[in-house]
Length: 602
Image (cartoon, rainbow, N blue to C red; front, top):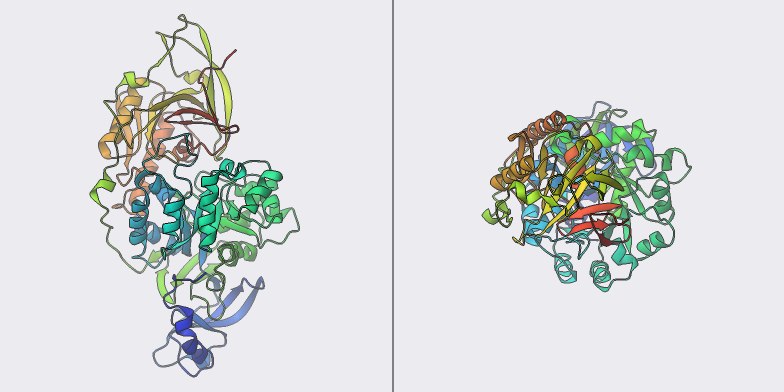
Protein backbone atom coordinates (compact mmCIF):
# COMPACT_ATOMS: atom_id res chain seq x y z
CA UNK A 1 0.00 0.00 0.00
CA UNK A 2 1.39 3.40 -0.97
CA UNK A 3 1.84 5.43 2.20
CA UNK A 4 0.89 9.09 1.95
CA UNK A 5 1.11 9.66 5.68
CA UNK A 6 4.82 10.49 5.84
CA UNK A 7 6.28 13.93 5.22
CA UNK A 8 8.16 12.72 2.17
CA UNK A 9 7.55 9.55 0.14
CA UNK A 10 10.44 7.11 0.21
CA UNK A 11 11.01 7.31 -3.53
CA UNK A 12 11.86 10.99 -3.17
CA UNK A 13 14.17 10.45 -0.21
CA UNK A 14 16.31 7.44 -1.14
CA UNK A 15 19.33 9.36 -2.52
CA UNK A 16 19.49 11.61 0.53
CA UNK A 17 18.97 8.78 3.01
CA UNK A 18 21.74 6.72 1.43
CA UNK A 19 24.10 9.70 1.59
CA UNK A 20 23.30 10.50 5.21
CA UNK A 21 23.71 6.88 6.28
CA UNK A 22 27.28 6.94 4.92
CA UNK A 23 28.17 10.35 6.29
CA UNK A 24 28.30 12.00 2.86
CA UNK A 25 25.52 14.40 3.90
CA UNK A 26 24.50 15.65 7.34
CA UNK A 27 21.35 14.46 9.05
CA UNK A 28 18.55 16.84 10.00
CA UNK A 29 18.29 15.26 13.46
CA UNK A 30 20.39 12.87 15.53
CA UNK A 31 19.06 11.40 18.77
CA UNK A 32 22.08 10.12 20.68
CA UNK A 33 22.67 7.61 23.44
CA UNK A 34 19.37 5.77 23.64
CA UNK A 35 18.43 2.25 24.63
CA UNK A 36 16.81 1.18 21.39
CA UNK A 37 13.73 -1.03 21.64
CA UNK A 38 14.16 -3.15 18.54
CA UNK A 39 10.69 -4.48 17.78
CA UNK A 40 12.05 -6.49 14.84
CA UNK A 41 14.11 -8.75 17.09
CA UNK A 42 12.40 -8.15 20.46
CA UNK A 43 15.56 -6.91 22.15
CA UNK A 44 16.98 -3.76 23.70
CA UNK A 45 20.15 -2.41 22.07
CA UNK A 46 22.31 -0.24 24.30
CA UNK A 47 24.02 3.06 23.42
CA UNK A 48 22.46 3.61 20.03
CA UNK A 49 22.06 6.77 17.95
CA UNK A 50 19.29 7.48 15.44
CA UNK A 51 19.93 9.74 12.44
CA UNK A 52 16.97 11.32 10.65
CA UNK A 53 16.61 13.06 7.30
CA UNK A 54 13.65 13.87 5.07
CA UNK A 55 11.35 12.86 7.94
CA UNK A 56 12.73 9.32 7.79
CA UNK A 57 15.31 7.25 9.59
CA UNK A 58 18.58 7.19 7.70
CA UNK A 59 20.85 5.37 10.10
CA UNK A 60 20.83 3.43 13.40
CA UNK A 61 24.16 2.87 15.18
CA UNK A 62 26.91 5.29 16.19
CA UNK A 63 25.98 8.42 14.28
CA UNK A 64 29.00 10.74 14.72
CA UNK A 65 29.53 10.69 10.96
CA UNK A 66 25.97 11.92 10.34
CA UNK A 67 26.31 15.15 12.32
CA UNK A 68 26.93 18.45 10.55
CA UNK A 69 26.75 22.14 11.43
CA UNK A 70 22.96 22.32 11.00
CA UNK A 71 22.13 18.95 12.53
CA UNK A 72 19.86 19.13 15.57
CA UNK A 73 21.44 16.86 18.19
CA UNK A 74 19.34 15.55 21.09
CA UNK A 75 20.91 13.68 24.00
CA UNK A 76 18.68 10.71 24.77
CA UNK A 77 20.31 10.43 28.19
CA UNK A 78 20.02 6.65 28.16
CA UNK A 79 16.26 6.70 27.80
CA UNK A 80 14.40 4.03 25.85
CA UNK A 81 13.62 4.83 22.21
CA UNK A 82 10.55 3.07 20.83
CA UNK A 83 8.71 3.37 17.54
CA UNK A 84 5.73 5.73 17.73
CA UNK A 85 2.60 4.02 19.03
CA UNK A 86 -0.23 3.05 16.67
CA UNK A 87 -3.86 2.48 17.69
CA UNK A 88 -5.36 -0.02 15.26
CA UNK A 89 -9.00 0.62 16.16
CA UNK A 90 -10.39 3.84 17.59
CA UNK A 91 -13.51 5.97 17.38
CA UNK A 92 -12.46 9.60 17.76
CA UNK A 93 -16.08 10.50 18.48
CA UNK A 94 -15.99 8.61 21.78
CA UNK A 95 -13.54 11.17 23.11
CA UNK A 96 -16.29 13.76 22.60
CA UNK A 97 -13.58 16.03 21.19
CA UNK A 98 -13.07 17.54 17.78
CA UNK A 99 -10.51 15.55 15.78
CA UNK A 100 -7.72 18.10 16.19
CA UNK A 101 -8.31 18.36 19.94
CA UNK A 102 -8.19 14.57 20.07
CA UNK A 103 -4.78 14.67 18.37
CA UNK A 104 -3.53 17.18 20.93
CA UNK A 105 -4.74 14.88 23.71
CA UNK A 106 -3.09 11.63 22.53
CA UNK A 107 0.22 12.65 20.93
CA UNK A 108 1.88 13.48 24.30
CA UNK A 109 1.16 9.88 25.31
CA UNK A 110 3.27 8.50 22.46
CA UNK A 111 0.49 8.00 19.93
CA UNK A 112 1.71 8.96 16.46
CA UNK A 113 -0.88 7.18 14.34
CA UNK A 114 -4.46 5.98 14.58
CA UNK A 115 -6.75 3.91 12.37
CA UNK A 116 -10.11 5.50 13.15
CA UNK A 117 -13.47 4.15 12.12
CA UNK A 118 -15.70 7.25 12.00
CA UNK A 119 -18.97 5.34 11.82
CA UNK A 120 -20.41 7.37 14.69
CA UNK A 121 -20.39 10.69 12.84
CA UNK A 122 -21.15 8.89 9.57
CA UNK A 123 -24.36 7.41 11.00
CA UNK A 124 -25.54 10.94 11.71
CA UNK A 125 -24.02 13.09 8.95
CA UNK A 126 -22.84 10.67 6.27
CA UNK A 127 -19.52 10.81 4.44
CA UNK A 128 -19.63 14.60 4.45
CA UNK A 129 -19.17 14.51 8.23
CA UNK A 130 -16.28 12.07 7.80
CA UNK A 131 -14.53 14.35 5.31
CA UNK A 132 -14.76 17.32 7.63
CA UNK A 133 -13.27 15.20 10.41
CA UNK A 134 -10.43 14.28 8.05
CA UNK A 135 -9.78 17.97 7.31
CA UNK A 136 -9.85 18.79 11.01
CA UNK A 137 -7.24 16.23 12.08
CA UNK A 138 -5.06 16.82 8.99
CA UNK A 139 -4.05 20.15 10.52
CA UNK A 140 -2.09 18.25 13.20
CA UNK A 141 0.97 15.95 13.02
CA UNK A 142 -1.11 12.91 14.01
CA UNK A 143 -1.27 10.27 11.27
CA UNK A 144 -4.99 9.59 10.97
CA UNK A 145 -5.38 6.64 8.61
CA UNK A 146 -9.12 6.31 8.19
CA UNK A 147 -11.22 3.23 7.57
CA UNK A 148 -14.52 3.87 5.77
CA UNK A 149 -17.57 2.95 7.87
CA UNK A 150 -18.93 -0.36 6.64
CA UNK A 151 -22.13 -0.60 8.63
CA UNK A 152 -24.28 2.49 8.36
CA UNK A 153 -26.68 1.37 9.71
CA UNK A 154 -24.91 -1.21 11.88
CA UNK A 155 -27.45 -3.93 11.10
CA UNK A 156 -29.76 -2.90 8.23
CA UNK A 157 -33.47 -3.12 8.89
CA UNK A 158 -33.27 -2.82 12.66
CA UNK A 159 -32.77 0.94 13.23
CA UNK A 160 -33.06 4.35 11.60
CA UNK A 161 -29.93 6.40 11.00
CA UNK A 162 -29.17 9.82 9.62
CA UNK A 163 -27.34 8.35 6.64
CA UNK A 164 -26.70 5.14 4.75
CA UNK A 165 -23.49 3.73 3.27
CA UNK A 166 -23.33 1.06 0.59
CA UNK A 167 -20.92 -0.40 -1.96
CA UNK A 168 -21.03 2.71 -4.17
CA UNK A 169 -20.00 5.03 -1.35
CA UNK A 170 -17.29 2.62 -0.26
CA UNK A 171 -15.93 2.43 -3.81
CA UNK A 172 -15.67 6.22 -3.90
CA UNK A 173 -14.04 6.51 -0.48
CA UNK A 174 -11.35 3.97 -1.36
CA UNK A 175 -9.93 6.55 -3.77
CA UNK A 176 -9.41 9.09 -0.99
CA UNK A 177 -5.78 9.41 0.15
CA UNK A 178 -6.85 9.43 3.81
CA UNK A 179 -8.47 5.99 3.53
CA UNK A 180 -6.59 2.75 4.23
CA UNK A 181 -9.40 0.26 4.64
CA UNK A 182 -12.94 -0.65 5.62
CA UNK A 183 -14.24 0.03 9.11
CA UNK A 184 -15.35 -2.73 11.44
CA UNK A 185 -17.70 -5.08 9.64
CA UNK A 186 -20.31 -5.38 12.39
CA UNK A 187 -22.81 -7.04 10.11
CA UNK A 188 -21.29 -10.47 10.62
CA UNK A 189 -24.74 -12.07 10.11
CA UNK A 190 -24.69 -10.60 6.59
CA UNK A 191 -21.19 -11.93 5.99
CA UNK A 192 -22.11 -15.43 7.18
CA UNK A 193 -25.38 -15.43 5.22
CA UNK A 194 -23.52 -14.44 2.03
CA UNK A 195 -25.69 -11.33 1.77
CA UNK A 196 -25.05 -9.74 -1.61
CA UNK A 197 -24.84 -6.11 -0.41
CA UNK A 198 -22.55 -6.96 2.50
CA UNK A 199 -20.15 -8.92 0.32
CA UNK A 200 -20.24 -6.17 -2.30
CA UNK A 201 -18.84 -3.81 0.37
CA UNK A 202 -16.07 -6.30 1.09
CA UNK A 203 -15.42 -6.66 -2.62
CA UNK A 204 -15.03 -2.92 -3.21
CA UNK A 205 -12.44 -2.79 -0.42
CA UNK A 206 -10.52 -5.81 -1.68
CA UNK A 207 -10.56 -4.56 -5.26
CA UNK A 208 -8.94 -1.34 -4.00
CA UNK A 209 -6.28 -3.43 -2.21
CA UNK A 210 -7.30 -2.10 1.20
CA UNK A 211 -7.62 -3.80 4.60
CA UNK A 212 -10.98 -4.92 6.01
CA UNK A 213 -11.33 -4.55 9.78
CA UNK A 214 -13.69 -6.75 11.73
CA UNK A 215 -16.21 -7.06 14.52
CA UNK A 216 -17.00 -10.69 15.30
CA UNK A 217 -18.66 -10.69 18.71
CA UNK A 218 -20.01 -14.24 18.75
CA UNK A 219 -18.48 -16.92 21.01
CA UNK A 220 -18.64 -19.38 18.10
CA UNK A 221 -15.07 -19.88 16.88
CA UNK A 222 -15.41 -22.71 14.36
CA UNK A 223 -17.40 -22.54 11.11
CA UNK A 224 -18.66 -19.01 11.56
CA UNK A 225 -15.26 -17.53 12.43
CA UNK A 226 -13.62 -19.43 9.57
CA UNK A 227 -16.23 -18.07 7.16
CA UNK A 228 -15.79 -14.55 8.48
CA UNK A 229 -12.00 -14.61 8.06
CA UNK A 230 -12.24 -16.32 4.66
CA UNK A 231 -14.25 -13.30 3.50
CA UNK A 232 -11.11 -11.19 3.72
CA UNK A 233 -11.50 -9.68 7.19
CA UNK A 234 -8.08 -9.15 8.71
CA UNK A 235 -8.54 -8.16 12.35
CA UNK A 236 -11.11 -8.07 15.14
CA UNK A 237 -11.37 -6.16 18.43
CA UNK A 238 -14.33 -8.08 19.87
CA UNK A 239 -12.43 -10.76 21.77
CA UNK A 240 -13.73 -10.84 25.33
CA UNK A 241 -12.47 -14.32 26.20
CA UNK A 242 -9.02 -15.86 26.04
CA UNK A 243 -10.48 -18.50 23.71
CA UNK A 244 -11.68 -15.84 21.26
CA UNK A 245 -8.26 -14.22 20.94
CA UNK A 246 -6.46 -17.54 20.57
CA UNK A 247 -8.85 -18.81 17.93
CA UNK A 248 -8.45 -15.67 15.84
CA UNK A 249 -4.65 -15.65 16.04
CA UNK A 250 -4.50 -19.34 15.17
CA UNK A 251 -6.56 -18.64 12.05
CA UNK A 252 -4.29 -15.79 10.96
CA UNK A 253 -6.53 -12.96 12.11
CA UNK A 254 -5.10 -10.07 14.14
CA UNK A 255 -6.66 -10.20 17.60
CA UNK A 256 -6.96 -6.64 18.88
CA UNK A 257 -6.84 -6.67 22.68
CA UNK A 258 -9.15 -3.90 23.88
CA UNK A 259 -8.78 -1.74 26.98
CA UNK A 260 -11.02 1.30 26.67
CA UNK A 261 -12.73 3.57 29.15
CA UNK A 262 -15.63 1.20 29.70
CA UNK A 263 -14.57 -2.06 28.01
CA UNK A 264 -11.89 -3.73 30.12
CA UNK A 265 -11.14 -6.89 28.14
CA UNK A 266 -7.38 -7.01 28.64
CA UNK A 267 -7.46 -8.86 31.96
CA UNK A 268 -9.13 -11.82 30.27
CA UNK A 269 -7.66 -11.80 26.76
CA UNK A 270 -4.08 -11.22 27.94
CA UNK A 271 -4.19 -14.84 29.13
CA UNK A 272 -3.99 -15.87 25.47
CA UNK A 273 -0.37 -14.70 25.68
CA UNK A 274 0.57 -15.16 29.32
CA UNK A 275 -0.81 -18.70 29.65
CA UNK A 276 0.06 -20.03 26.19
CA UNK A 277 3.34 -20.34 24.34
CA UNK A 278 2.21 -18.73 21.12
CA UNK A 279 3.84 -16.31 18.75
CA UNK A 280 2.39 -12.87 19.46
CA UNK A 281 2.78 -11.36 16.00
CA UNK A 282 -1.00 -11.50 15.49
CA UNK A 283 -1.80 -9.63 18.71
CA UNK A 284 -2.28 -5.88 18.98
CA UNK A 285 -3.46 -3.47 21.68
CA UNK A 286 -6.26 -1.01 20.92
CA UNK A 287 -8.48 1.45 22.76
CA UNK A 288 -11.70 1.36 20.70
CA UNK A 289 -13.53 3.96 22.83
CA UNK A 290 -11.78 6.39 25.16
CA UNK A 291 -13.57 9.26 26.83
CA UNK A 292 -11.85 12.54 27.77
CA UNK A 293 -11.62 11.77 31.48
CA UNK A 294 -9.49 8.71 30.69
CA UNK A 295 -7.27 10.62 28.26
CA UNK A 296 -6.56 13.35 30.81
CA UNK A 297 -6.28 11.23 33.95
CA UNK A 298 -4.69 8.01 32.63
CA UNK A 299 -3.44 8.51 29.09
CA UNK A 300 -3.91 6.69 25.82
CA UNK A 301 -1.73 3.87 24.45
CA UNK A 302 0.85 4.47 27.18
CA UNK A 303 -1.86 3.62 29.71
CA UNK A 304 -2.89 0.50 27.78
CA UNK A 305 0.76 -0.56 27.64
CA UNK A 306 0.98 -0.18 31.42
CA UNK A 307 -2.13 -2.30 31.78
CA UNK A 308 -0.61 -4.96 29.52
CA UNK A 309 2.52 -5.10 31.66
CA UNK A 310 0.36 -5.34 34.79
CA UNK A 311 -1.37 -8.35 33.24
CA UNK A 312 1.99 -10.08 32.78
CA UNK A 313 2.81 -9.26 29.17
CA UNK A 314 6.50 -8.57 28.59
CA UNK A 315 7.07 -4.80 28.01
CA UNK A 316 8.85 -5.39 24.70
CA UNK A 317 6.06 -7.68 23.51
CA UNK A 318 3.51 -5.06 24.54
CA UNK A 319 5.34 -2.38 22.56
CA UNK A 320 5.41 -4.67 19.53
CA UNK A 321 1.63 -4.88 19.88
CA UNK A 322 1.25 -1.11 19.34
CA UNK A 323 3.97 -0.73 16.73
CA UNK A 324 5.17 -3.34 14.25
CA UNK A 325 2.26 -5.75 14.79
CA UNK A 326 -0.26 -3.00 14.11
CA UNK A 327 1.68 -1.77 11.08
CA UNK A 328 1.80 -5.32 9.70
CA UNK A 329 -1.94 -5.71 10.27
CA UNK A 330 -2.55 -2.77 7.95
CA UNK A 331 0.24 -3.85 5.56
CA UNK A 332 2.19 -0.66 6.31
CA UNK A 333 5.21 -2.09 8.13
CA UNK A 334 7.39 -1.13 5.17
CA UNK A 335 6.86 2.47 6.34
CA UNK A 336 5.73 2.42 9.97
CA UNK A 337 6.16 0.53 13.20
CA UNK A 338 9.92 0.18 13.68
CA UNK A 339 13.04 2.29 14.16
CA UNK A 340 14.89 0.99 11.13
CA UNK A 341 16.44 2.66 8.06
CA UNK A 342 13.96 4.10 5.58
CA UNK A 343 10.98 4.09 7.93
CA UNK A 344 9.13 7.23 8.97
CA UNK A 345 10.91 8.89 11.88
CA UNK A 346 8.11 8.39 14.38
CA UNK A 347 9.96 8.01 17.66
CA UNK A 348 8.98 7.96 21.32
CA UNK A 349 11.42 8.45 24.20
CA UNK A 350 10.48 6.63 27.40
CA UNK A 351 12.09 7.61 30.69
CA UNK A 352 10.64 4.52 32.41
CA UNK A 353 9.92 1.33 30.51
CA UNK A 354 7.92 -0.39 33.24
CA UNK A 355 5.60 2.60 33.67
CA UNK A 356 5.74 3.58 29.99
CA UNK A 357 6.47 7.22 30.85
CA UNK A 358 6.73 9.24 27.63
CA UNK A 359 9.12 12.21 27.64
CA UNK A 360 9.35 13.17 23.95
CA UNK A 361 7.51 12.35 20.73
CA UNK A 362 8.74 12.92 17.18
CA UNK A 363 6.50 12.48 14.14
CA UNK A 364 8.27 12.48 10.76
CA UNK A 365 11.41 13.66 12.54
CA UNK A 366 9.77 16.76 13.98
CA UNK A 367 9.23 17.21 17.70
CA UNK A 368 5.48 16.98 18.35
CA UNK A 369 5.29 16.70 22.14
CA UNK A 370 7.56 17.09 25.14
CA UNK A 371 6.97 16.47 28.84
CA UNK A 372 3.28 15.78 28.41
CA UNK A 373 2.42 18.71 26.14
CA UNK A 374 2.20 19.20 22.38
CA UNK A 375 4.51 21.77 20.81
CA UNK A 376 2.08 22.80 18.07
CA UNK A 377 -1.22 24.68 18.12
CA UNK A 378 -4.36 24.67 15.98
CA UNK A 379 -7.53 26.71 16.15
CA UNK A 380 -10.92 25.00 16.55
CA UNK A 381 -12.19 23.71 13.21
CA UNK A 382 -15.21 25.53 11.77
CA UNK A 383 -17.72 22.73 11.08
CA UNK A 384 -20.71 23.69 8.87
CA UNK A 385 -23.72 25.04 10.77
CA UNK A 386 -26.02 22.16 9.78
CA UNK A 387 -23.60 19.67 11.35
CA UNK A 388 -23.93 21.57 14.61
CA UNK A 389 -27.73 21.29 14.57
CA UNK A 390 -28.66 17.64 14.08
CA UNK A 391 -31.53 17.18 16.56
CA UNK A 392 -34.71 16.53 14.57
CA UNK A 393 -37.13 14.86 16.99
CA UNK A 394 -40.78 14.87 15.94
CA UNK A 395 -43.29 16.61 18.14
CA UNK A 396 -43.18 17.84 21.71
CA UNK A 397 -41.57 15.60 24.31
CA UNK A 398 -43.72 15.33 27.45
CA UNK A 399 -44.05 12.78 30.28
CA UNK A 400 -46.86 11.19 28.28
CA UNK A 401 -44.28 10.39 25.56
CA UNK A 402 -42.81 7.75 27.86
CA UNK A 403 -46.02 6.14 29.06
CA UNK A 404 -46.23 2.36 28.49
CA UNK A 405 -49.94 1.56 28.51
CA UNK A 406 -51.24 -1.78 29.78
CA UNK A 407 -54.68 -3.23 29.13
CA UNK A 408 -54.45 -5.75 31.97
CA UNK A 409 -56.41 -5.13 35.21
CA UNK A 410 -54.83 -2.99 37.94
CA UNK A 411 -52.24 -4.91 39.95
CA UNK A 412 -51.78 -7.66 37.35
CA UNK A 413 -48.23 -8.92 36.97
CA UNK A 414 -46.90 -8.59 33.41
CA UNK A 415 -43.68 -10.36 32.49
CA UNK A 416 -41.47 -8.24 30.22
CA UNK A 417 -38.10 -8.59 28.57
CA UNK A 418 -35.34 -6.53 30.18
CA UNK A 419 -31.79 -5.79 29.05
CA UNK A 420 -29.32 -6.50 31.85
CA UNK A 421 -26.11 -4.55 31.26
CA UNK A 422 -22.74 -5.76 32.51
CA UNK A 423 -20.33 -3.30 34.08
CA UNK A 424 -17.16 -2.75 32.00
CA UNK A 425 -18.29 -5.25 29.34
CA UNK A 426 -19.95 -4.83 25.95
CA UNK A 427 -22.28 -7.82 26.23
CA UNK A 428 -25.65 -7.97 27.97
CA UNK A 429 -28.25 -10.54 29.03
CA UNK A 430 -31.93 -10.92 28.29
CA UNK A 431 -33.85 -11.19 31.54
CA UNK A 432 -37.57 -11.70 32.18
CA UNK A 433 -39.00 -9.56 34.98
CA UNK A 434 -42.49 -9.12 36.41
CA UNK A 435 -43.98 -5.62 36.65
CA UNK A 436 -47.35 -4.76 38.16
CA UNK A 437 -49.85 -2.67 36.26
CA UNK A 438 -50.37 0.69 37.97
CA UNK A 439 -52.73 3.39 36.69
CA UNK A 440 -53.17 1.47 33.47
CA UNK A 441 -49.47 1.44 32.62
CA UNK A 442 -46.14 -0.30 33.22
CA UNK A 443 -43.55 1.66 35.19
CA UNK A 444 -39.94 1.45 36.28
CA UNK A 445 -39.31 -0.57 39.43
CA UNK A 446 -36.13 0.66 41.16
CA UNK A 447 -36.56 -1.99 43.85
CA UNK A 448 -35.88 -4.61 41.18
CA UNK A 449 -33.34 -2.33 39.49
CA UNK A 450 -35.64 -2.24 36.45
CA UNK A 451 -35.77 1.05 34.54
CA UNK A 452 -37.94 2.14 31.65
CA UNK A 453 -35.96 2.76 28.46
CA UNK A 454 -37.05 4.60 25.32
CA UNK A 455 -35.20 5.27 22.04
CA UNK A 456 -36.62 8.13 19.96
CA UNK A 457 -35.67 8.61 16.30
CA UNK A 458 -33.97 12.00 15.98
CA UNK A 459 -32.69 12.29 12.41
CA UNK A 460 -35.74 12.60 10.15
CA UNK A 461 -38.65 13.47 12.47
CA UNK A 462 -40.35 10.11 11.86
CA UNK A 463 -41.78 9.88 15.35
CA UNK A 464 -40.60 6.29 15.75
CA UNK A 465 -39.75 5.11 19.24
CA UNK A 466 -38.80 1.80 20.80
CA UNK A 467 -39.74 0.92 24.38
CA UNK A 468 -38.06 -1.51 26.77
CA UNK A 469 -36.58 -1.93 30.24
CA UNK A 470 -33.01 -2.26 31.53
CA UNK A 471 -31.37 -3.74 34.62
CA UNK A 472 -27.92 -3.24 36.10
CA UNK A 473 -27.50 0.51 36.50
CA UNK A 474 -28.66 0.65 40.11
CA UNK A 475 -30.46 3.98 39.65
CA UNK A 476 -32.82 4.78 42.52
CA UNK A 477 -34.41 7.96 41.15
CA UNK A 478 -34.02 10.32 38.23
CA UNK A 479 -33.30 9.85 34.54
CA UNK A 480 -30.47 9.87 31.99
CA UNK A 481 -30.59 10.87 28.34
CA UNK A 482 -27.96 10.60 25.62
CA UNK A 483 -27.55 11.09 21.89
CA UNK A 484 -24.36 9.04 22.17
CA UNK A 485 -26.31 5.86 21.51
CA UNK A 486 -24.49 3.44 19.23
CA UNK A 487 -24.62 3.27 16.36
CA UNK A 488 -27.62 5.16 15.01
CA UNK A 489 -27.22 7.75 17.79
CA UNK A 490 -30.89 8.34 18.25
CA UNK A 491 -32.15 9.91 21.49
CA UNK A 492 -31.86 7.33 24.28
CA UNK A 493 -33.62 7.97 27.61
CA UNK A 494 -33.55 5.78 30.74
CA UNK A 495 -35.25 6.66 34.00
CA UNK A 496 -37.29 5.91 37.08
CA UNK A 497 -40.12 8.30 36.21
CA UNK A 498 -41.62 9.87 33.10
CA UNK A 499 -41.25 13.47 34.29
CA UNK A 500 -37.48 13.34 34.72
CA UNK A 501 -37.17 11.37 31.47
CA UNK A 502 -38.95 14.16 29.59
CA UNK A 503 -36.81 16.80 31.29
CA UNK A 504 -33.54 15.07 30.36
CA UNK A 505 -34.67 14.52 26.76
CA UNK A 506 -35.69 18.13 26.30
CA UNK A 507 -32.36 19.33 27.72
CA UNK A 508 -30.55 17.54 24.91
CA UNK A 509 -32.92 18.82 22.27
CA UNK A 510 -32.23 22.32 23.59
CA UNK A 511 -28.41 22.06 23.54
CA UNK A 512 -28.08 20.14 20.27
CA UNK A 513 -27.33 16.72 21.72
CA UNK A 514 -25.03 15.23 24.32
CA UNK A 515 -25.66 13.62 27.69
CA UNK A 516 -27.79 14.75 30.62
CA UNK A 517 -28.91 13.58 34.07
CA UNK A 518 -32.13 14.80 35.72
CA UNK A 519 -33.60 14.23 39.15
CA UNK A 520 -36.67 15.59 40.92
CA UNK A 521 -37.41 18.10 38.18
CA UNK A 522 -33.87 19.49 37.91
CA UNK A 523 -30.97 18.97 35.52
CA UNK A 524 -28.09 17.73 37.69
CA UNK A 525 -25.50 17.59 34.93
CA UNK A 526 -25.21 18.08 31.18
CA UNK A 527 -22.49 17.64 28.58
CA UNK A 528 -23.41 19.52 25.38
CA UNK A 529 -22.19 17.78 22.22
CA UNK A 530 -23.50 19.91 19.38
CA UNK A 531 -21.43 18.35 16.57
CA UNK A 532 -23.67 15.49 15.37
CA UNK A 533 -24.82 15.10 18.98
CA UNK A 534 -21.49 13.34 19.56
CA UNK A 535 -18.66 15.87 19.95
CA UNK A 536 -17.84 19.36 21.12
CA UNK A 537 -15.16 20.72 18.75
CA UNK A 538 -14.66 23.92 20.75
CA UNK A 539 -13.61 22.30 24.03
CA UNK A 540 -10.20 20.97 25.03
CA UNK A 541 -9.68 17.54 26.54
CA UNK A 542 -9.27 19.12 29.97
CA UNK A 543 -12.51 21.07 29.63
CA UNK A 544 -14.43 18.04 28.42
CA UNK A 545 -12.90 15.92 31.16
CA UNK A 546 -14.23 18.36 33.74
CA UNK A 547 -17.74 18.22 32.25
CA UNK A 548 -17.72 14.45 31.96
CA UNK A 549 -16.29 14.08 35.47
CA UNK A 550 -19.14 16.17 36.82
CA UNK A 551 -21.63 14.04 34.89
CA UNK A 552 -20.16 10.88 36.41
CA UNK A 553 -20.71 12.41 39.85
CA UNK A 554 -24.36 12.99 39.04
CA UNK A 555 -24.70 9.33 38.05
CA UNK A 556 -23.38 8.42 41.50
CA UNK A 557 -25.84 10.85 43.07
CA UNK A 558 -28.76 8.99 41.51
CA UNK A 559 -27.39 5.60 42.54
CA UNK A 560 -25.06 4.25 39.83
CA UNK A 561 -21.59 2.99 40.79
CA UNK A 562 -20.33 1.35 37.56
CA UNK A 563 -17.34 2.88 35.72
CA UNK A 564 -18.15 5.10 32.73
CA UNK A 565 -21.87 4.28 32.97
CA UNK A 566 -22.84 6.52 30.05
CA UNK A 567 -20.65 4.40 27.76
CA UNK A 568 -22.39 1.23 28.95
CA UNK A 569 -25.70 3.01 28.44
CA UNK A 570 -24.65 4.00 24.92
CA UNK A 571 -24.54 0.33 23.87
CA UNK A 572 -28.16 -0.40 24.82
CA UNK A 573 -29.29 0.25 21.19
CA UNK A 574 -26.36 -1.49 19.42
CA UNK A 575 -28.06 -4.31 17.54
CA UNK A 576 -24.87 -6.12 16.51
CA UNK A 577 -24.00 -7.16 20.09
CA UNK A 578 -25.62 -10.04 21.97
CA UNK A 579 -28.05 -10.64 23.56
CA UNK A 580 -30.96 -8.16 23.67
CA UNK A 581 -30.93 -4.54 22.40
CA UNK A 582 -33.40 -1.71 21.93
CA UNK A 583 -33.51 0.53 18.85
CA UNK A 584 -36.04 3.14 17.73
CA UNK A 585 -37.85 0.28 15.96
CA UNK A 586 -38.15 -1.96 19.04
CA UNK A 587 -36.49 -4.79 20.94
CA UNK A 588 -34.04 -6.92 18.94
CA UNK A 589 -32.93 -10.43 19.82
CA UNK A 590 -29.31 -10.15 18.70
CA UNK A 591 -28.71 -13.89 18.71
CA UNK A 592 -31.45 -14.62 16.15
CA UNK A 593 -31.66 -11.09 14.69
CA UNK A 594 -35.40 -10.82 15.02
CA UNK A 595 -37.64 -8.25 16.63
CA UNK A 596 -39.24 -9.54 19.81
CA UNK A 597 -42.20 -8.16 21.78
CA UNK A 598 -41.81 -6.36 25.09
CA UNK A 599 -44.16 -8.75 26.84
CA UNK A 600 -43.11 -12.38 27.30
CA UNK A 601 -45.76 -14.79 26.12
CA UNK A 602 -46.76 -17.38 28.70
